[in-house]
Length: 338
Image (cartoon, rainbow, N blue to C red):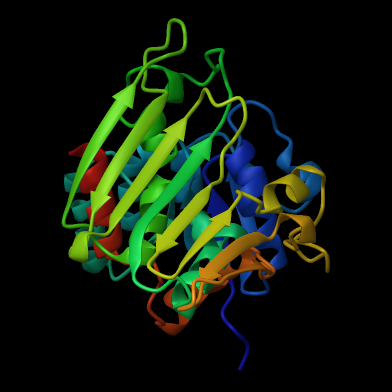
């Protein structure tokens, strides 16, 4: 018996669609990259000659051949387009942020149940080599009892970008909805749901209309503190992950290489894809009972977003639970909006 092939359509072929979705859908044997929406430039066929290119979202959603719709449009459109796709009896994969408020998210999950379809969040940073290294160390117990964790997203973009949906005060704009979904998902994946949280935002770039600095403080049981920081004005990026426990410290830079390789034209099927440079491994320092310190490099595992699409396939076709749950997403958005 042949395996089911999920015929898939992508709602936008900008950086997200062309870099983070199409190459993996094309590589994974469980999918057929069927269609894309290209409102202006028709370029997808240069890489995927048999792909159908639609002018509008409604045209793609109306395509009866399509089983799965990837919603990777501006943040404030996610709810509208995901709802349309569900009501057209499509499965849906939604880019972060899943929605701009928790009421919309709850409605989408409810509609998916009514339509007997899957709606799944695309949280690709759970599949990065740097995050996987952090999880490996945390799971090993070598840090002892957790005390605190610091996670950062540092960028330097002094000038206002051209994307209206990100740089103007519309629902879902600013760093809170651009980068916080990544760090919040990582925190939830590593530590679960916080007991309480506080958020701080700032606007520092000249003439900015949206937050370009975000700091979120999460408080966990037993007093564990988790600090999430995102900034558009860090000239020298700091360590992306610093975990301190009663018996050790782990420091890891943001070193996942997939985006860099994809921009260079490397296929996810390349044997070198997702392999981190050895000189970028994280550093674990532990202390023995006699006070002697031991330092070791923690080798990162090979990463690939093909594993995310494999989890999506297994969830839709085989009924295997998806790693990012409805509760994960609802709590994430409650923190974003609260």
